[in-house]
Length: 142
Image (cartoon, rainbow, N blue to C red; front, top):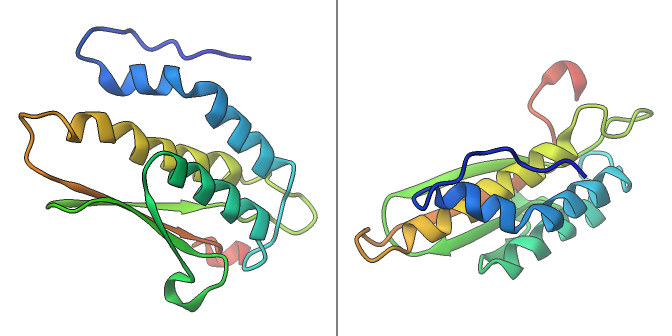
């Protein structure tokens, strides 16, 4: 397995978090890659990402915008609210050639990696919210 090559300093909290969680993030992306599901049908992929975020302290709400496989993951209760958008659908016939298995996992990792910084005592209370949607935004590939 490749490892992160980020230089670590005592102040590089995000790089440390990513290193500490690298194996589970790779496993998450790998699981989604091996279970390609088309838009609006990603029951395994969405559950995989939601379960991971829930294990990291996010509260999951399903059926965002009335879509069965869409969810919102929220942590915190302050302002500002930093939003993230994850996609995890696959393309018909080619699976995750578009890399949404990586995109969904990377977005979840970014939201999680900020938590240690936002919980430092010198910081005001903040929130992170991640919306996860099944359909890609590129109309040419819809």
